[in-house]
Amino acid sequence: EAGVVQSPRYKIIEKKQPVAFWCNPISGHNTLYWYLQNLGQGPELLIRYENEEAVDDSQLPKDRFSAERLKGVDSTLKIQPAELGDSAVYLCASSPGTGAQETQYFGPGTRLLVL
Amino acid sequence: AQSVTQLDSHVSVSEGTPVLLRCNYSSSYSPSLFWYVQHPNKGLQLLLKYTSAATLVKGINGFEAEFKKSETSFHLTKPSAHMSDAAEYFCVVSEQGGSEKLVFGKGTKLTVNP
Image (spheres, rainbow over the protein chains, first blue to last red):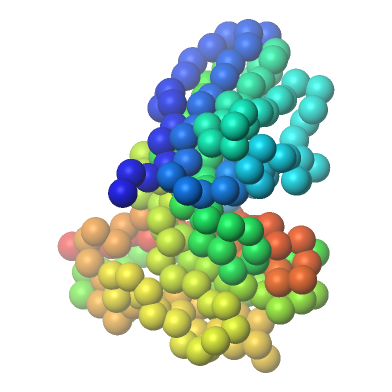
């Protein structure tokens, strides 16, 4: 069974430029998550989707970040414009359902460097 | 709100000796607790999870953890370290009946010396 797929794996951009990350969850997983992981820290949730609906986006900086999950499968996370402080690893995860006991399956992440 | 404290940012052991990674949690509801491992340039992988069944939880690769409510702890152990265990380990809590989102600790980097 294929795991969570993310692309690109690495991205280097200049500040003020836009950038987008793509995620393909495990087949059949209805719930999709985007996390931000700063260096030396644990991941922090940015947004959670149940099918097409964003059910928790309280931690998403909406002035520059946006996300979508068309058709309830793949998802895209966008930053426009990027700032130096956005340099981090962006992780995508998926799970079969929702709830505190659900196991989340993580992709390898996209490492972003903003110059 | 729930929170997690990993008591050691770095742990160094010799191959073949026991591993202990310490984790304390705070939760207003019944917690679910997880340990994830992250190898360099790899995705986070679930080692084990506690979801209010048996308090001693066995996971993959010989790891286990014990849920102690009185001590609000969920320490990760392994009897004998292997070189391949070198990685970053994250203790994670979520709340049944609460926000249900995962809250990660800051991680413990495990080094295994030959």
